[in-house]
Amino acid sequence: MVLVAAALVPAAMDAAAAGDPVAGEAKAQVCVQCHGPGGNSASAEFPSLAAQPPLYVQYQLIQFREERRKDPRMSPFAAKLTDTDMKDLGAYFSQQKLEPPAATPDAAKVEAGRAITQSMHCNSCHKPDFSGQQHIARLAGQHEAYLVKELRGFKTGARPDIDGSMASAAQPLTDADIVNVAHYLATYR
Amino acid sequence: MKYPALAIAAALAASAALAQQPAPPAPPPGQPQGQPPNTAVAPAIPPSWAQGRTKDQEGSTLAPHPPGLTALDAREIPVSSLKAPPGFEVTLWASGMPNARSMTQSPKGTLYVGTRFPGTVYAVTDQGGQRQVKTLLKGMYRSNGVAYKDGALYVAELSRILRYDDIDNHLDSAPKPVVVNDSLPKDEAHGWKFLKLGPDGWLYFQIGAPANIIMPPYTHATINRLNPQTGVVETVARGVRNSVGMDFHPVTHQLWFTNNGRDWVNDDLPNDTLHVLKAKGENFGYPFCHQGDLLDPEYGKGRSCDEFSKPAAKLGPHVASLGMRFYTGSMFPAEYRNNIFIAEHGSWNRTKKSGYNVTRVVLDKSGKVVKVEPFVEGWLQGDQFWGRPADVHVLPDGSLLVSDDVAGAIFRVAYKGGNRTASR
Image (cartoon, rainbow over all chains, first blue to last red; front, side, top):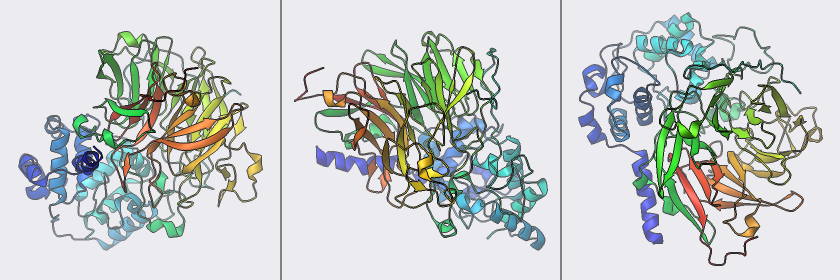
């Protein structure tokens, strides 16, 4: 009995933690029509999902399904997904290589953006290389216009976040700050 | 003492929960409130969990665990890994409730379960030995606190307290809520509420410190009570960083509560604490003194811990002591009578994880704590946890429920005996 229990625990934790990237690839066929092959989106209308932390993808999908985050294009797809689907999609996209378009950094904007991310402690959650962790998004190499839109959304409340951290963090940012931060992060390699 | 900062809302019928915009973060020490926040060059406020780090700690990889937003499939829940003392049995009682946290029960038997992140409140009923889980409320904002009084369910959101009348008879379609108070602070950090009905008929709740370690506004780091008839709000305790568990001693009727200690001192300090309120308005030390005998490295300068009330017990560093209840049932052996059970959510700000259990606190006849020991363990396996206890609740039959906001489930601890002590 003890042996059985001991054998069960790691399996259960694995099941709870990890998705199946192979199953995820099959399930991602509809996603990549907008988010691009392997989650490398060609349009700033759609965020790149490649190399996002698996839990970030899963938790955002939950937010869409539970109608806490709303988007007329995204919501109908998320509404149909199970927890397992979301886990699998997270596993798949997290393993794809991010291939952002060639960056043309503007030195002044980069420096202004860098100073703001430093003073705002963005790296505390998003990690020093902005690759994200756990349920926290990868920002490096994301579409600039998407980052601008979402930061403005966090400030106004149009984009709700899970625990309020981003809403709080975005409050002191001016629109110029948001533009500079987005440029810095989008061109960060 | 009257609480003038909290305007009292007229009890008007209101529509479904509206989104409550979070407040901007609290200003850093020294910066007066109400001034426009600095941008760009001047250092801003780190996220609340990272606030209070020393220079050396800024590179730490410790960060809060992701919130539980899913429920494990009942077949995946390793309930057999939960260990209680001999004679006790732990079973899975209900599942499929993402982020299940605070519990309250109506006399008819419906268990109401609040959540911190998904904005849902569940209603669990026993249908011939099988539990039926209903999502009673959706779209709430940090609906962590639940209390039942006179046929109504009270729900504490981030900044509001709502009342749902005749709730037991409306489990399939909750009535429109009455807004009892909509003027509580909107700070997200330690902003979710624990709600507890007192023997005096008032509803008790905390307003946590709006950061890890900060000079709080006088409204914050407090425990307060609301008179549901008049709407009056009073502060009953100060200097409490964040209490997410309260109960009243079954004999003395004094308020006992858990408190989460600050982060980023070190792995072993300060302890979370258990307190008893002996007089209204007592101050328990935050941000100056922690655990009754540890001056804060920054705010403790020039202060003494003797200025403040001492804790009844130290519970361990970073263990995240949340929900607590006195054991008032008759199923467990007599020595458990009027003990306290505490759900320890488990640490993040510690190199080696600690907590992740249900802790038993034994008091002597005079109400002095004589023993603190683990009661149910097993959520933590090595360095990995598969669930996190958030609250406890004593069922009418004397068994103990434990909510888990990562597994999205509720466990039941029953005494099966063998050498059962004669009942009192």
